[in-house]
Image (cartoon, rainbow, N blue to C red; front, top):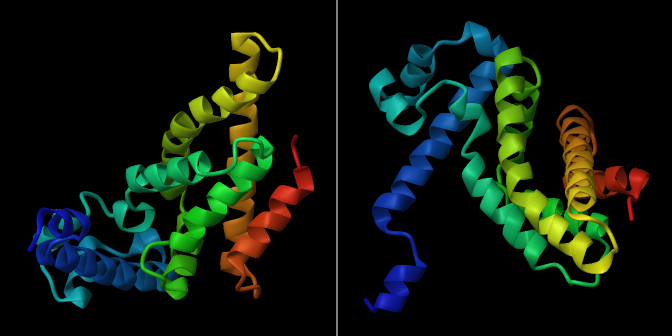
Amino acid sequence: MSETTAGSRPGLRDLTRDAVRARIAAVAMARFDADGFDRVTVEQVAAEAGISARSFHRYFPAKEDAVIGDPARHSEVLAAAFRDRPTDEPVWSALREAFATMLLRGDGGDPVTARRSVRVMTSTPSLRARNLEKHHAWAEVLVPLVARRLGGGERLGGADVDLRARTVVQAALGCFDVSITAWATGDDADVTGILRRSFDVLDVR
């Protein structure tokens, strides 16, 4: 196998680990959604998934991680999607399409588990707090990118650019939350369509 091929594809061990993580997360989400996050123990999820509690913690350090996932990986996808947007595109449109790209790439293409994860995430204070931490991580990546675009095309001081960038990014995160919650609890299966409609309500320029 050439270096190029080896560097461009995950190894078998990585693929197996990702598949196991996805399986454990799916089992956990089904139990959390049915019985309530706080009422289900790691031991119960592990037993149903056919592993030990110790093995569960090798994949997910805390029970919340089975729901929230890895915010760093989503941050990278979101930032790359925003950078790839045309430089002359309005910032709000670029953010909307960056979030849409992140949703389309998803975490394995299982909408049932994805919907369950959103319902579980919004049902418990500890998970809502962790979700805010994830959004903070996304904002820290997006704000400098948005500020660079705003500052390059407008006569604003540095503080004004930063303030506007942070405001626009937080508004985008709010639209994202509204969209995925509506998708997870409603009948419309088109999550990117809901997202775009949500962003279009504000249409910040």
